[in-house]
Image (tube, rainbow, N blue to C red; front, top):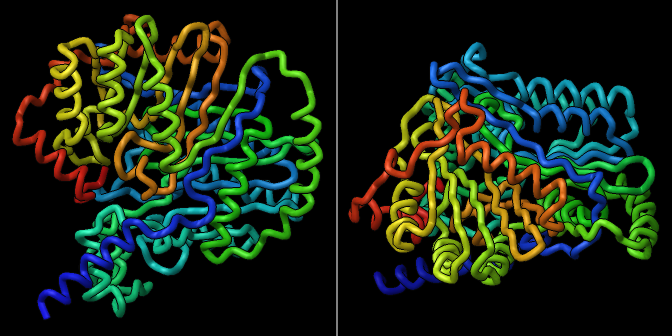
Length: 493
């Protein structure tokens, strides 16, 4: 009997870790021309001067509100966190740089719907916003009642990133323990949130997520416009440092198709509302493909595991004289780490800026995995890889970006994906965009200026980053703890 139970456990674990991906996942879009004028590199930067005075520049949120106000044809939003929850600390201190971004975005959607009641609006959210209960939170229920399509992503269709827990849960309590809307257990996600049922609590350790952060619309003339970001419209995250890219063109079409497919998978039935726009843009796409391209710039959308494939392809092509810049909130994926080390051994210049993994909504974290990975990168490259830490002050360096300069070309990748197994291994839902551009383009200059400002701490009034030694973690025990957590999925990164 014990052998049969073990075989059942192994079979269930293997199936749910390797089962076919739903339609809309692992998308590698077609490379499409993109006009330089449509590209806008957006950054949210929180920094402090030598006196501890903080400043925050919320450019991404402002650009998103503008996109919503100017939406035509349709609007699709997909966000991991879209709420005013205070987190485990339970209290948001708006006087300390926190902004009511969720309310502002919600009001923008209500105003858009009131001004254009026939405009199809689709909002996709992760179940974490409802604390893994079946019902929508009150703020988003207001949008749904007004006629906006609000869809909670069905995470059960995704593969298991934490099979040790998920498999045991399925074979024991998962088949009968329901995520009801009422319970009596303390809410670990929000100290001031509602109490939860045991069924809702039991879904948290699956550690699955729709982790995308994007907004897509049309311009009224058949062209797609979008913002792909690392930032959430989440009050408790509003002081985080983030990056985003605003762009227009047919490169975004695979991402739109992916969003609609995943919404359908989650029970949405509003596809017909997008039919007219699909027909219009099909004609526009034919015209765009036939038009001459003078900018030499192209964009591609990648999701989930396709993000890792694209990044590895770029890193593997680097040679002496090339340059790689990485900015990451979480960095732990073994394939990317090895590719970065190999690029350094071939003579490419590699610089990395990481979050120290010490701040989490009022609580102090242990530094895993970034501190262990940083020590490995420096030691294994004989200090050829240069690394600095972003100085956080309660908020997070939440950016997810890679930039590669190869000959006369510049390649930029950014979006929602941390460089971790969960984000790049076809587990979480993720969305990134890559742009290939001339090395002397305005986009390349904007990214370089942002990175150099952090790296060199300019202007002198701010201290953006600290030396690698500040958060060095040489402990081998801690290193193998990270490797175990990364390999098994028993982690939040």
